[in-house]
Length: 324
Image (cartoon, helix red, strand yellow):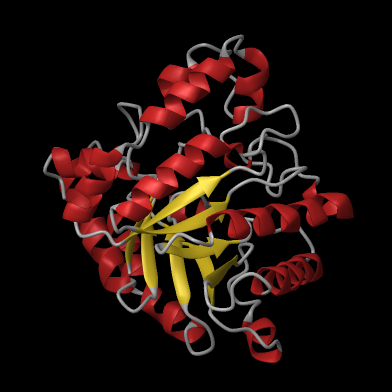
């Protein structure tokens, strides 16, 4: 499947939503900070949720050949924990996407206590989800609520139980959370695809999938080459070679479970002074598609970004500038 993320919509990230975050201090990068510091945050979020993605955007994506959108949603979509409620607009937008015939994945992108300490986890610098069973139980409850609420929609393709639980969290905690939540969701729907993020440990899942009785499931991994020191050391040829070799790990994992590349981009940590940026982006795009062609699904991050920078992450801009 060819998919794209509708990032920066129901879960704010400062780097993706620069105009909104001009209203708050420069170190404020996540939705928790935005909600607390911007006096009219409720009105601003209402406007943003209504207009960030509209009917014309989904039609445009369908015309580009996409057949799946991954939609990050927050644990507070019902307005809990001091956050602003977004469920009514989420209802409306999912009906719109469904009526247009676009399959969608609901991706629980944040969790109580935060599962990764990232801005995309809702509150940067906090990582306490796994330290309190009440947080974990609440996360299961939210997944159940999402499944029940949207189960009637024909194009509800899949649900991802939790985005990017951090590498430092004990895998036994994550395994148990996944299994408990899987069984709760199967009481509602026996066939909808349930997706588990690999918690940044892609080689740790064979026993989990082969020793448990799981049906209609997939593993999600995120393939970026711009964050680690090892990737920073690569030149362009090194990046292209690494991207083309992705098929090895994809084929290995898919010997026991379908693999989704739930996030990837054209972001690179390169000095482009001596390179033509557009040519670099095109060649890196092609190399990644070649390396990932056997994956069950590839889902680009992201559809659009409200910023003049980060060209390699903004698919709409890449198309409109004729780079892709």
